[in-house]
Image 1 (cartoon, helix red, strand yellow):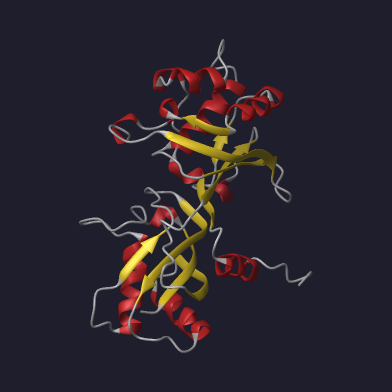
Image 2 (cartoon, helix red, strand yellow; image 1 turned 135 degrees about the horizontal axis):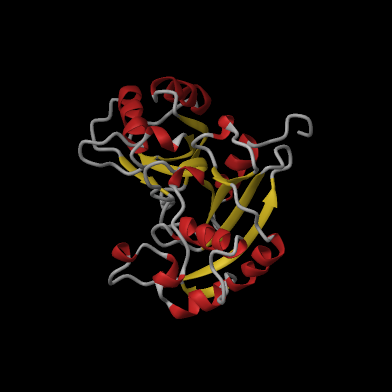
Length: 271
């Protein structure tokens, strides 16, 4: 059965998360409704996603896939039609045929998220619901030094929503962590994290903990101490969801997905 991968961007403030819910409109609803209009499937759509984002969380590079018996002849034309029907707050940036064994969730080898904060004494209304405003002074050298404690495989129980992890494994392997100012908007600071997976609210708690350490709200312990303690009460606050973005999914065995990202984000001045 044909298997199609989608590269998707969406405004999380307009949806109750990605995954289907009863009596709530989600990103999956918007996409599936549009797909059903276009494909008129006789069977149920088998729809999957790399990461199930919460209400308010955005995505700049989410990967989804679906199976359908009907062959799609022109992917570019289909993508344009899909976007026209999806409601304007979710957009398919690219589309590709992938092997039948490809699964956007289970084939994924790493996920990358970005959390944006506004580091400024002034409000910036253009970033409303797009980044979290931090008014306090941050010791950036102290904060950057904390990133070393994330690297490698660790038990991140202290940095997750406790109700969501009961009876579940809490070890994850971090591959990358960085904090950089945006190239064009220097008061926007991007916290970037990549790992083989994340626990519920993990990025929002990690970023909140880093900010609390950098502003001096947390003293006498570093991020390594907090992780080793496995005690959520020692970590920082859970930041609001609207500063969080699903940035990229990685697939070691599927170059088709790398090609999707490359085509979608190609620099037009340096093709």
